[in-house]
Image 1 (cartoon, rainbow, N blue to C red):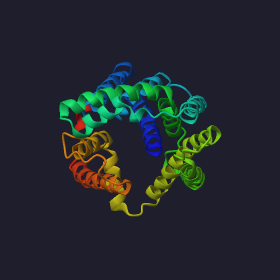
Image 2: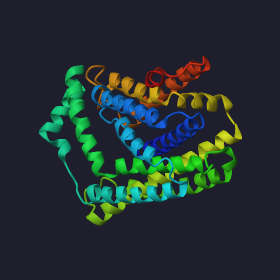
Image 3: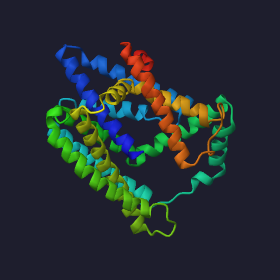
Image 4: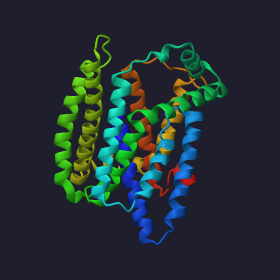
Length: 314
């Protein structure tokens, strides 16, 4: 999940900078336009977190987006410096919380009751449970690295766009990101995988595990981004590239749509299959949902339509 969050957060920061720059060029009043967009996004997040999936990221994105909006006139170099500071704070907090403190709260009576309501309860019962878990998640994410990492990567995305590194002309940057990012990321995450979850690990090795995972996730994200950018520049497998690109143009609809479909598969108000799949099985379900979304998005955008949740957001 770290790789997804890193890529999505960076892209969101790029999108924010792009919208601000375009609105400025059209003399749009940004002080009313963009805060309104963020407020609606926050509302989407609250509804998603309570009614669909408690692991919502849209509300934290709206909060982080507000901070980045206030810093929109900052120079790219300063943005990168601030991003490094926020990232350091987040990693430090993550080490303190995850590396030095081990909790078994998931096995508490309250945790089991919430889990049972999600797995077996009606939609109303599940929504109450989702609301409690969502509230806990929002408080926890404010303490550990999650929100700090979002804020840092929003700034990285905005800086990358304004420095011209998102352009096909920056292919040398993309190549270095792909090679070094994949090499460093796979090494760090591989070592973290060997260490992670072992009960006999002492504090020092737990700290090393958390650091490897945090840094490895960021490096792998850069590697993935560089590899995809190189693929797009070489224009190979154009049909697949076009379909994936159209899926990205409906990012909000597809994000919420995945949550809705997965809820119908795993939650009690649907098939209630939570816990019935192995990890490869869950991965296969995710790939199946995404493949269907690529096919639908390709046809949808080809008609000149925007996604339904994008339309509602506008």
